[in-house]
Length: 241
Image (cartoon, rainbow, N blue to C red; front, side, top):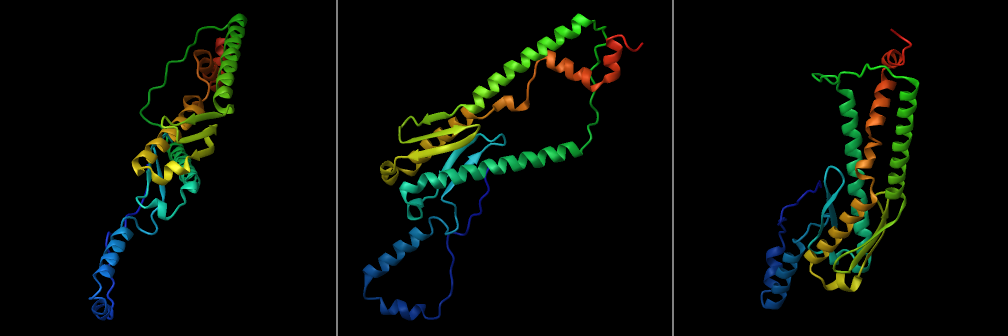
């Protein structure tokens, strides 16, 4: 998921003095060659094109990292990590904004055509209730332990090539280091590959993942069903006919 605007490869602007300027340099072929070379280089990327674009899925998973073809003209290789962090944070914020917007739209549309589950109406004795509460308590403790382990610890990842490393916690990137000497001479595709590898693994290993949906278990689902229907709860414990 990424959004970008591509400008035309060539933009012409009429200059009435251009013909006379060309005549004055007609005897200097080297100057003409330099001008053509510079014009070609300048059209590789537009002036307002981002140096780094981090592509993410709808769930926020990093799928790829793209560098501008001429990124070294805009960013010192020693500062590349700053641009990557900014792009990654921007992509994450966009995903969060989309989720909030999608949640608001979903809640505004009433559900229709769904078949409700048949509720369990079997009687609940005192021992049954206590057994259910104990099971819910144990499941919640397991969930909290798993969530704490996932989001509180700092995850450190190093690329297989060894030139990029970073750390993250709770899905947020804390630090990113890029070998500036390698970035100064490595091919763009190689840099993109190692950046993608590190950012993707940092997100996968430090974010809550499926735990973000909350605790789920058979006991928890049963208790939630009872809490959502007080009349059913009272009937099952024998307080209502």
